[in-house]
Length: 141
Image 1: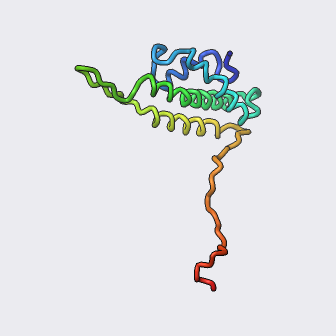
Image 2: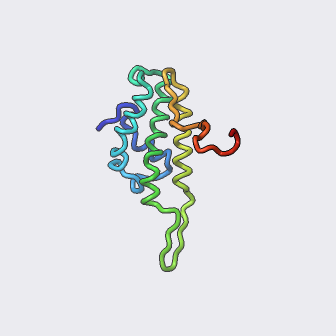
Image 3: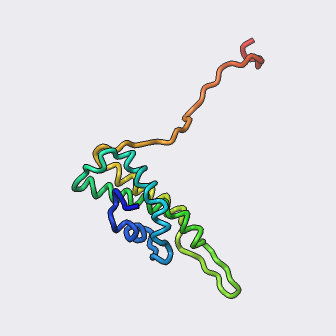
């Protein structure tokens, strides 16, 4: 499926953000998440098709960051942090979980600069209230 937001160079831009080659991350692997990520962004930026100028560039940069973040679990599985063989012990300098967090923060930073952006927050209980119980605890008898 062609990219509706990023454009034809999406695979190269994602690999550049991640610092990997086409051997490490194939276009087929990127294509598996391309539509999902772009639709998620399009749902949040309903005016994506009509954006121009700097808003369009922020949209593309945010979508690339989101797609790159979606590729981090794939790279984590393919390129483990530490690998041992008989005579070698190779340790990767890249922490893919931290990279994913940074890319998601970049996505929010870029997309939040666009006119028409809707910020979404996780549904989290901030506090709870409890009332008296029927059992009687001796405090108010």
